[in-house]
Image (cartoon, rainbow, N blue to C red):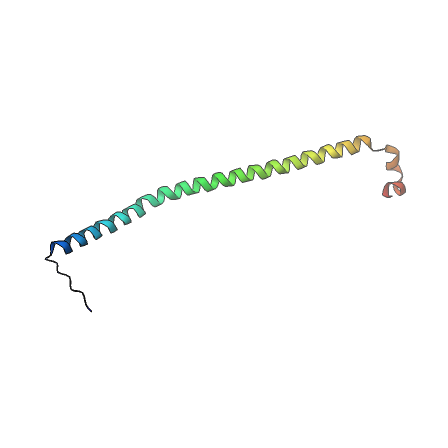
Length: 91
């Protein structure tokens, strides 16, 4: 079944004009807003990555400080005489 459009009908013209305006508006929004939304997406993702990197860096720094304190404690309390005797040091 083939549909024949009557272009002399006002209803057909209004439907086609409305469809044309809708598609034109849709394409305009896609082209005009895509750069704006892409910029927001880049800013948001870079902010999230920066926050994650700061969290990981803080966690690593906390671990390093804890190990340094432990090593300082061991160094302060380690008997010097034990350093000269390898046999007892390994045991």
